[in-house]
Amino acid sequence: MSSKNAPPLDTSLCVQTSPHARVKRKIAALMEVVELLKQDRVTKQRKMTYYISQGQAIWCMVVLYSPIEDLIAKNDWHCEDNKDSNSTPENRQNHLQCGYIELIKVLPWVHEKLSNLDHEELEDMLKKLKQGMDSACGDDTGTLKELVASWVNIECNVTPLIRMDDKHHQGFVNDACGKLLCPVEWHWGDPVIRAGIHDHTTAYIVSENSWPTFIYKNYQADAKNLEHGLFKSKLLVMAIFTSLSSANEVDGNDNGANIIKNNQCAQRQLDQARVKTCVASIIGMRKVTPHVIMLKILLQIHFALSNITSWHTVDGDFDYQIFWDNIMDFFEDTLSPVAQARVRELLEWWTRKVFRRNHREDLTMDVVSQMSVSALTAQRQEMENAIFDSD
Image 1 (cartoon, rainbow, N blue to C red):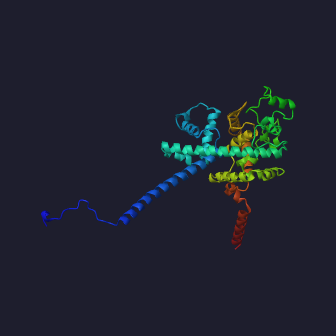
Image 2: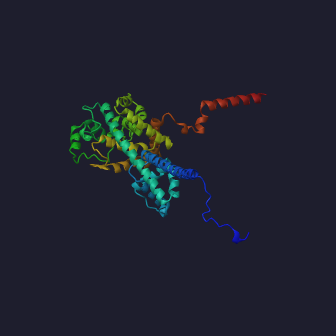
Image 3: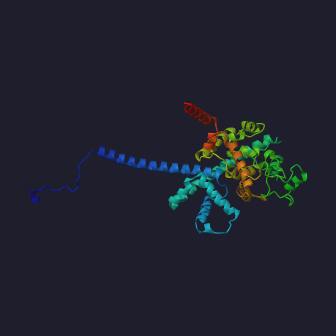
């Protein structure tokens, strides 16, 4: 057929379909887009929730004062030319590097993320982690403030009782709190010492350079052996993860269990304790480290006993930052293998207190080989061999 006789071409090339069917297809396409957006939103929400929960773990187990960026920067410094430097960094710088190492132990995935994420994604991750840290800090501080006040009321038979909603009558103005906060080199029962501390005299300056009484077993220190009983008080054990289970495991006359049982805030504390246990489970915490107890709980208990109403790095003559460093020095700047062994024994003591029901990670092949099941298997094999040899 010639082009002259061809029918005129319909430029619309439109094949008519049902309007209803077209609308259905458009709706289906839009629904797919909406579903993709929902999935993307859910993924972002899950990622945000995950980072925030991991940030809570960082607060619980790694660091209190140092920003995460400082830990990362310090590790970068070690990875560059400075790693060959013969200069010895200050203790504070050592603590930053130790903090980064602890961070990677607790959250191993962070190290990989630092290498793979672009700048915006990294900034978002650090923002969420810090959000989780701030949330955990607020929760722990508020919970410990009430829990410590309840503990002191019963443990020390305080009259009148300390009000959990008013810290102005705590600290050294309160006899029970003052005794617990008093440096171990002084005797709180001496009226001259009490007056000197109350009046802020130069002879009795309460600073971060003294160990407070509340960190010692039975709240007493041996002046000739200040390491004896250090970091073993009931109050410290009670405060681990601000949980009921830790408080109930305090050795003694069951004061810990009774206090928790009678505490008017017990149910709320129980809920929070479950959250803390969950954080420990998520990150696979099985052993206690100095960062867990001494650097978070100890400082927060000091704050809870004091009469300051909001967290400050410096409270009068007491600098919490330097106090933190002093505790780190005790654990990390050990002088000899003997001192290191004592530190390990202390941390093992804490691990038994907190995780006494689960020590499977310590069941090495050598340990298992000495147990009765393995012994029975070996004995049966010996008897079989004896019979075989006799034949």
